[in-house]
Length: 192
Ligand SMILES: CC(C)(COP(=O)(O)OP(=O)(O)OC[C@H]1O[C@@H](n2cnc3c(N)ncnc32)[C@H](O)[C@@H]1OP(=O)(O)O)[C@@H](O)C(=O)NCCC(=O)NCCS
Image (cartoon, helix red, strand yellow):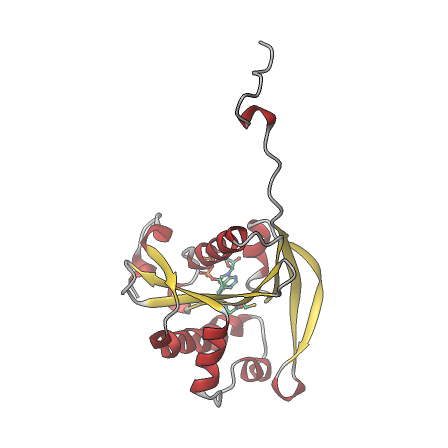
């Protein structure tokens, strides 16, 4: 994966594009590697097996990706190697949920996660959503805090077989920022 050798402007070599059906195997591979390798730093083997079981039906995986607004991060251009993906679900009441965010460990810590989160935030703003919710892993929490999310609570989610995973319920407010009077057409310039 060439990103690991890229320089300071890593994020510039990452292209975000909409998910297509043919991305199902690639996203599944990224998910499994991200959980089994990266998340292994903070979660037990039992938790990792419950989080990313081996026996998920490919059709069920593909359906979940297609049901969400899924975007993928590729190296170089839209046809480049798939190194990460994110999913956005709209709750219908003005809130978006960052449903999934996974980056392949070989491309980790080069800004791919940040680029994907910023893309999802942009999509939420385009849709006039007020807020973006997420249940963040221990690995994701510091990145989200840097991007303006706040922690609401500790979340203990029961996964497959009742195995509990600790995550963090976090959100970012996306209400439109008030327009500065000086930016409005015809506004008077402040006195010199
Ligand atoms: C969380 C994740 C999406 C971040 O992707 P990324 O491309 O590495 O993120 P960025 O490069 O934009 O940001 C890096 C930051 O993420 C966190 N992070 C990423 N990998 C990490 C690791 N192996 N150990 C600890 N923190 C890590 C750190 O805060 C890091 O900042 P730092 O390098 O200054 O310490 C990725 O690590 C991942 O897929 N993790 C496993 C699955 C997971 O937890 N997904 C979230 C589901 S809720």
